[in-house]
Image (cartoon, rainbow, N blue to C red; front, side):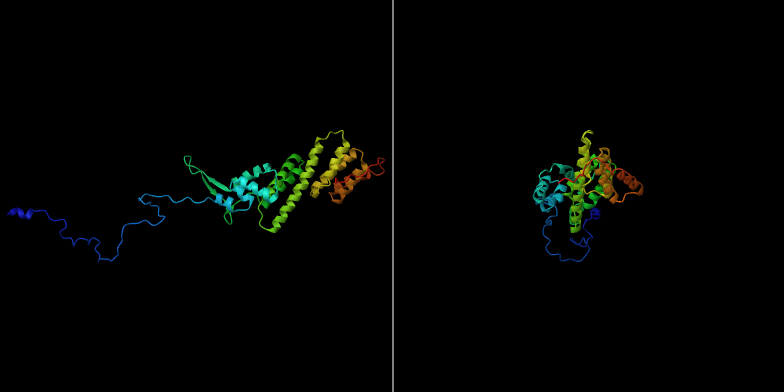
Length: 294
């Protein structure tokens, strides 16, 4: 009787029909088939994540493809860099290049510390073409040359000698972009050679005893035959003139004075030189000017 109206309603009652949940007309999407990940999407055969393949670091490319010893040193491949230097330049002693190698390797990488508990991040610093951004260039060597000139002017011969040696060593690893820069680099090498030779003579002269006056004068005279900047040549001629005058080698002192006047020094200094040169006239001692070494 009365219990028939209290029965539970069917949940699916009033629904348009099974499969009509989208509320749209039936679409022909074709056979979708099972879900398959695209190649390289990061899913393995079992559905788990697969990390992408690690690429080749730039430093490996630098040491594999470059023919420049500078790029190999920047990549940290010091062994191949030394082999290239031996094959291209015939260098026998490579120990002096240690500091230049380390500087190149350090300057080609940027380092970032994200947090104290995380490892550091390193990113290569590159020049156009993807090659390392080397710290040794013609412009940087010219700046170092100016500093070396300053040491010579100040009379710091030991520091100047080390500075010119360092520039000479770095020239083998310097990067240039044109033939003109190659010519300028060769000129820089010639300057360093002249100054290194002259400074070695001066440092050796400092070690000679004061009693050996003739030897001191010879070494000072040799220094004046190095191809120096005019300002430095005037200082060398003045030193040689003073030494030879004190040693009573007056004719030799007069020859240094004449060379010094040819460089057009300051008027007050030129007057002093002329006065010293005039005092050597009529000298009894017979000596000849020193000649450059063969």
